[in-house]
Figure 1 (cartoon, rainbow, N blue to C red):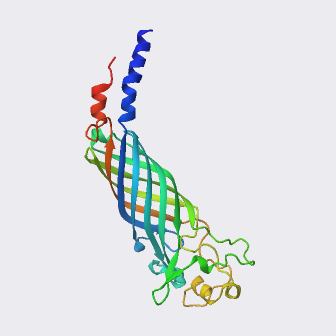
Figure 2: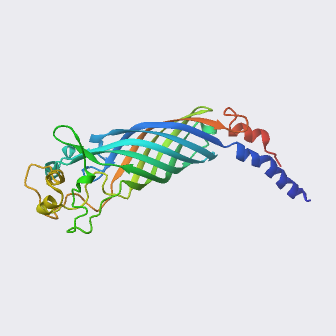
Figure 3: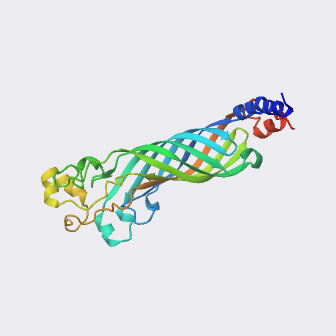
Length: 282
């Protein structure tokens, strides 16, 4: 066997275990605010209706610069015409709130080796699945479930293009953040994560108004009442109730804290120490 071949074999048998056992697991939680972007928000993100999110996650540090993770997040989002400046939107007087339950898988790209620098910026992207259910409140403060009212004429023969929307949908989470190594087994962070969805009904608003008499005959007074909650006359059929041009989004901003474990000798022997002590030098 040649000298070069022997060196390659030594490298594989000595350094490869480090690559395998030097990888870290992280388990932790997230806490912060949530916001919505859609037909009831005049601005890109409605900060006037900020709610909360909390989550749990598990991550695997594949290399110092690549982390694979999965997480479960519960959140609340809300929006209302009362925060809009445009008079027509304020007169529409619609509002909603909804829970969000999301499961996601994502890949993080770390700019630095956190064990060398003690901190690192990162970006992430992935795919998620989430559920939602838009509701509002009546004048007595009681919860009204909007989907079952079919406020835009979903299911009526007169509107064959208006099917009932699904309450489970796909999201594309992506964003950026920064992580800090508090100690070898504790990682704190702050991140902003946007969620692109493929539904325009987080707020139960998307298309033009259905005809008043058609909606009244098909679903009754309550549906008409919550299709338009303004003080003026009910809008004519087809007048924009929402905009179909863009789907709705939601945003999570907050802090993370994770316990880190793994490596050949436990959490207090990180990559840097293992790299120096075990790999052969040629």
